[in-house]
Amino acid sequence: MSAHRQQTLSTVSGYLASFGLWALAYVGRFALVGSLPPQGFPFLTFFPAVMLAAYFFGLGPGLLCAALSVVAAYVSFIPHSQPTLTGLATGDMIALSFFSSILLVDCIVLHLLRRSRQLAAERERDLRELTSNSPDVLTRFDRSYRHLFVSAAIERLTGRPTSDFIGKTNRELGMPAELCAPWEQALETVFLEARTVSLRFTYEGAVFAATLVPEFDVSREVVKSVLGVTRDISEIERHQRTLETHDRQKDHMLATVAHELRNPLMTFSAGVTLLEKLQDPPAAVQRTIAAMRRQTTLMSRLVSDLMDLNRIRADLVELNRTDADLKTILQASREVSAELAQQKHIHLELRLPSEDMKLDADTSRLVQVFCNLITNAIKFSDEGSQVVIQAEPRENSYEVQVRDQGAGIEADQLEAVFEPFVQAPAGRQQQSGLGLGLALVKQVVRLHAGTVSAASEGLGRGATFTVSLPRSRPGLEALASAPG
Image 1 (cartoon, one colour):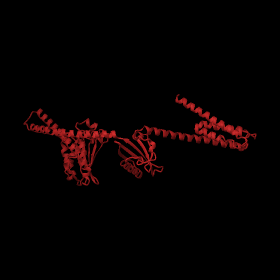
Image 2 (cartoon, helix red, strand yellow):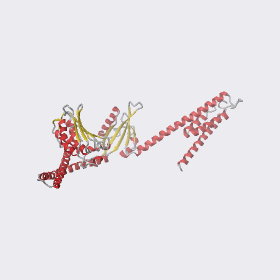
Image 3 (cartoon, helix red, strand yellow):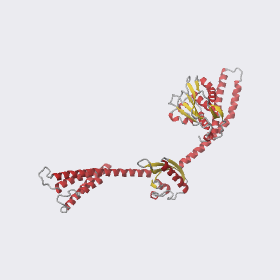
Image 4 (cartoon, one colour):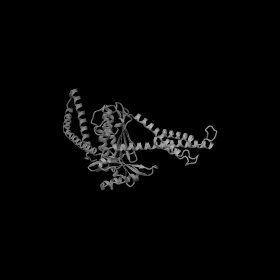
């Protein structure tokens, strides 16, 4: 049977049922003739019939029952003694109108009540189906940590029906004390501080992550209950451990490769040095030697960056901190990068404040940081453009910005460019390389308890790298040892 046909039959059945209710009310009122005053209570039995029709079958059947009731009362139970248009006395006419209005209002109110209950039942059914089909365990706790609601997923997890949980705490359900304690602490935090709390725990060999969310009363002043969403993350944990193992293996492999490349590169560099000492070699030989020197220098730098990065990630690097001068560091970094800038006819502008910029730092490592940033800006800038290095003192730190007018960085790549072996697509189109420079910058700055960030207005609109370094040393050791 089609849905439309079924709906039509349901509607017809509603009207027939309302007609039946009216007929019963009509017969019932006739049965009371003689027991009631001749002019009393003409609508006595019709009121419940109309109300039942409107509540159970809807507005249309209710109105039909009301109309039939008004006609029946007018024809059969209200005396017609006056020679007026309706044959009713003024008082009876007013009473008929009044009771007709009441029946109409009853129909509308009961219909709306019926619809609200239907909507509530539909929402409850939808929620029940949603929670039943969800792999996550949904729970609701009161202020005594008792379960107010538990989704069907708890049965798949524990083998116990949801009815076992309602009105009971985790301890009353027999959960281990070492598991109940963190749950109770997390619930207490949500109730007291009205904030979301995350919780991780192990149950029967599986790892779970729970999020506890406060639910407020109408005034939004008091947390009346806590909604918990618990998910099995055992598989995610397993994949995470696998990725961490592969990451360690990758770091070990790269460190080994970098170490093994050092000796051949030293040999190549020494050979190029000997070739550079040749007296008046042919032009073709000079070009070849120059190309060999450039490539050897590039490879040496890549291997050095790779070894530095692996040592830092393995916490094998100790900074040689001294009383350093940030202005001197930036001037040295500019000088080291000057030759590359001259090759591309790029103007390097260094803007320094007049005051001293003293800090506790490893000078050589910070020169490495700013050389990488300046060289990176030069590489991705067009010939004849400008790179600005600007330093400014802040309240508790120094801020250095390296701005270029080059390729720019996509918005979704501003964080990723600091990861090893990652280059923004715009950069990959212009330059080759392993993408180690910015990763090394991030790690060295972190060792100094500083921060580095990238900003760009879009492709072709340049980029700005901002390094913030603390002025004083307190807390450096703790921050430097934190995972990067």
